[in-house]
Amino acid sequence: MEDRSPAAPPEEFGGRRYNAYNDWVKRVHGGRLQKISVDAGFTCPNRDGTLGVGGCAFCNNDGFTPAYLRERRGILDQIDTGVAFMRRRYPGAKIFLAYFQSYSNTYGDIERLRECYETALAHPDIGGLAIGTRPDCLPDGVLDYLARLARRVPLELEIGIESCNDAVLEECLRGHDFACTRDALRRAAERGLSVTGHLLLGLPLETRESLIDGAGKLAGLPLDALKFHQLQIVRGTRLARRYRADPGSVPLMPPDVYLDAVVDMLERLPPRVRIQRLGSEVPPAQRVSPDWGIRLSRFPALLDARLGERETWQGRLFQSQKCHGKS
Ligand code: SF4
Image 1 (cartoon, helix red, strand yellow):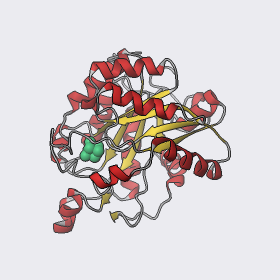
Image 2 (cartoon, rainbow, N blue to C red):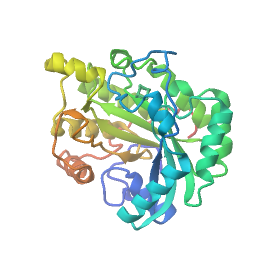
Image 3 (cartoon, protein in one colour):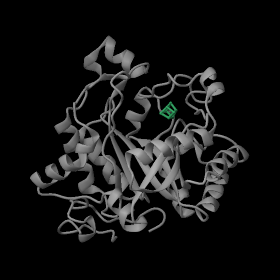
Image 4 (cartoon, rainbow, N blue to C red):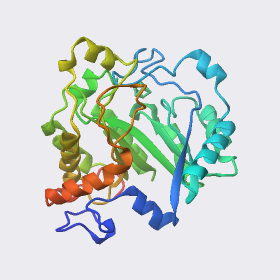
């Protein structure tokens, strides 16, 4: 898809007003591509003491205990369970990717990474990998290894961006700045890796203006896909403690404000960036606030409706600029 500001929603959007990842998957793979979550027992530098011990302010560390890691089931066992569940839920699922989702899944030496990924790939139902990580856990050696792997199997590298605003990243104790993200995206793209960015909208200190500014920054970076999530306060996090002590210190977006924020950003993003996710649902038992009462499955229709009401579409305000990486 071309990198320019379209005068109307491009034909490739297939009747939508944004570039939906699921539509692309159907076109390219001929069916549903299902991710099977795997917890390989990684940690992250914001938990193991390298940068901090309490994690990012929004991150729930309930599951992170040595006992849990000792007792966790093996990767193949987790995949067996996940594939059986997904086959029942989505009988049309064609390809399964092992999704290394929990914590920072490139935070380890290459031998350990190789062992984890190859174990998953040895499962007969697994056709590729999705690997979630932080931008500061991607040294050149790891990226080189991932690039070699990506020549063999489909591989999506998911990088936690969360915010493009350094004050917001500092406030949520993220432990890296946006320059770190920019550098990781550039180095991943130089190696031809397919990169998805993970965004969290509504963090403390984030504003409509800073989100719009962030979309402008992202528009010039070599991203293949983006995931949007609304901030939800999860039990056991620093944010939950702050919210309980002073609810006014963590203003939460209502759904219409969130949708408008996504629209504001989409308008400024290139049409080629595939939108892989529009929100998330934290289980009620884990969630402190907010309770929108909206199922995730309704988000695509709500977003398209809002884009229509605002007579806009992804890329309408995109300012073409030199992309720092692959084109
Ligand atoms: S969000 Fe990611 S980087 Fe932050 S504490 Fe949780 S696992 Fe670590």
